[in-house]
Image (cartoon, rainbow, N blue to C red; front, side, top):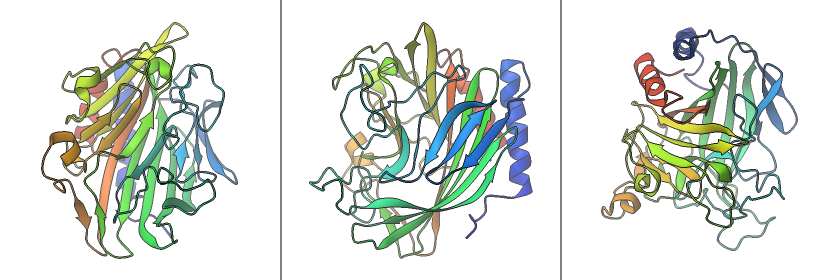
Length: 336
């Protein structure tokens, strides 16, 4: 099976042009070598021979990306629960696994926290099942295409996900361009109105605005494209959200950018001071107090929903990293 509509030459040239434009922000060409290696349980991603991340597709209730490192190799997302015993890390919300994409109500099934309802570690729950790697390509940008199937607790298919990830780097940042194509090939699919979603990551404690949920060492700042900071950014619409903080004397951060072509752009954000950041176009009731169901979105049978995001793992804070300029370049240049 091939991911549909994601491999045209026009898109490939668009990636190259965008990488050159992003590199110009740092005043240096994008010459890093990105290598992807497919293994039994993951696709390993290195940049100039150093670990950047792994696309882990076994051992979890959904595929995740872990770890995620800054240009200097500093881990930016929480290690727990993938790795345990890291000093200062809270052990809350076990479904917050580094970086992932799920949602709390999909045809009534909870894919976000499927084991929060009394299920044991070996009990069947709604989950995202990795099916195949369609493309795994190294170069000055790395390209990974995968196919997954969302299934309910009984194993019945709900939808098929085709994911395209483009990994790249310049002198100041590492980036992942993500395209999610959600196909309603098993009947209509309704993403329900809940804050529990959707495309999300959980930062390490140093990037949190405050110590909470048992964490230690918070020195971070949460800011969005509208200038709202920390708690004020939760549930608000914005083009992007950024977390930054100090680790070993260096300021580093993560930004998540929403594409103008996405459903209900600019999206709402499930962005918490304890380190959760989720782009969620569906949770309108929880975020705004609108009537329940206001955020429901149904994909008709046989149709699809496409969502596009850009992740930037950077040095400095959002201003120093030029996150708003990077968003404008991405928005004007299309998506890979």
